[in-house]
Image (cartoon, rainbow, N blue to C red; front, side, top):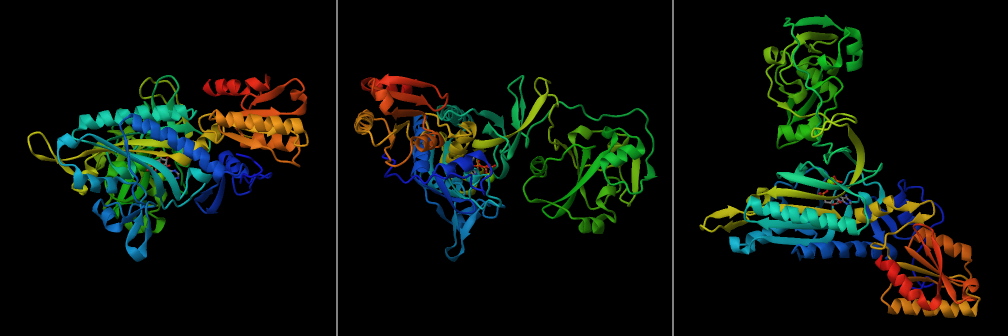
Length: 564
Ligand code: ATP
Ligand code: MG
C-alpha cells in the first residue's frame, strides 16, 4: 500500500475523549473513529488488524473441527421469549416496529437449528461457530472498543449427547483459546468464572491483566489458583463460637452509623460484628449478614438466591418494613425478611447486630439460638493478601480485561427450545450444549494495551496490519525513488504486505514519527547515505535495534525476521 494513496488519517494530538492508551492510539493511528457512544467505524488500517485476529481465530476453530456459520443479527423477539432471555437487564436492543431484536449472542438461533435438524446421537457431537456482529444494550460503553454496543464476536457452540462429551468439547475450546491468544502475542491467564445470566455448570475466563479492566480477579502467585472475584474464595478463618453463653442484651448506641464506629464504641473485635445488608429478591425483602467489614459480592448473592432479580432496598422502604434505619437493622425478631448469612458466620455466637430500633444494638446474639436463618452461603469478596484456598499463600487481587469466556451450558437452552436427540436405546434426550465467546475488538485493544510506548503502537507480527513499513527518506533523490520502488515490488512479490511511505514533500522526521505511531514491526529505511554503500536500513520497532543490509539481500533478511 502506497501511503500517498492510503486513507490513514493520523492525529497529532491525543483525543480528549479517549482515556485509555489503546483507545487513544487507535484514534491517533487512524484505525478507528467513533460514530456514537459505543459504536465505531473501522477504517482500513483498523479493519486489517481485525482481519488478522479473525483469521487466527478461524484457523484454530477449524483445527478443533469447528464448522463456520453466519447467523443473522436480526432475530424474532418470540425466540428470546422462549428461553426467558428477552428481558435480561442491559442485554437486548430491539426494533419495536417489527418485533425484532438485535442478537446479543446466538444460543437461541443455534438451539433452533439443532431442534430442526439433529435427530440422533449419530448426528453428535458438533462444533458450530461464527465470527459475526453482536449488539448489546451496554449501559456505559467506555474504554473505546473494549465495551461497545456493537462489536464482533467469535461465538461457538458445542452440541453433545452426554456430559462427558461436553467435557471433551469444552477442553478442545480451552486449548484452542490458549493457542489463539498465544499466537496473537498476548500475555493472558485463565480464571474460574461465574456463569451469570448464561446459566450452566462451569466456566472459565481468559484474562489480560490491566488497570483499565472492569473485572476483578484473585490470583495466587504461588500456585495455579485464579478466579474471578465473583466466584473466588479464600482460606480466611470462620468466626466460630465463643465460650460464654450469655443472653441477648440491648445496648444504646447513639449516632453510631458504621461498623468501625460500632467497633470503637463497644470496644468489640470486628469478627463479632454482624453487619446487615438489605435487598429485594423478586420483590421480597432479604437480609444478608456479613462479618464486620467483609464486602458482600452481589454476583455471589444473586447466585445464592437463585433465579430472579436482586435489587437494593432504599431507606424509606426499609423504614416502612422494619421501623428502623439501615444502621440499626439486625436479624433477631425480624419479620417478613428472608435471612441469609455469609459462611464465615456459620453457627457463630457472641455477635453484635442492629436491634431494629434506631440507636440500639443487640449483644450476645447466637445465630443457632436466636435467628431463623434460611442458609449460609459464600457471599464475601476475597481481599488482597488473604490466604489462597489451595495453598494458603497470599492472594493478589487485581484488575483484568476479559478476552474470552467458555461455558458448560448443559441443557437449559436445548430444553427451552426443544432441541432433542434419540439416544442408542431410542429415548429422547436434550442436547448437552457448551457456549464459547471471544471479543475480536478486545484482542486488538489488549494487544495495544500490552504493547505500546510513548511514540505509538508496537505491533506483534501476528496482528500487524502490515509487517513492513518501508520509508523512502528523500523523494528528491532519484536513487532513493528507484531503490525504494524496487524494494516495494520485491517484498510484495515475496508475499509480504508493505506499507510504503513514498510521500513527496513530507520531511524524514515526520515520516519516522508516523512510522513509530503506526507501529509496524519492521521499518525498512531507504536513504541516500546507505545507498552509497548499496545498503538499506532495517529498524525493529520493538527493540529499536537497527541494522544495515545490502539491498539485494533485503527480501531474504526480512523473510527470516518474519519467521523468527
Ligand atoms: P463482560 O463481562 O465484559 O460484559 P460478558 O461476560 O458479557 O463480558 P460474553 O457474553 O461471555 O461476555 O461474551 C463473549 C466475549 O465477547 C467476551 O469475553 C468479550 O471478549 C466480548 N464482549 C462482550 N461484551 C462486549 C462488549 N460490550 N464490547 C466488546 N466486546 C465484548
Ligand atoms: Mg457483558
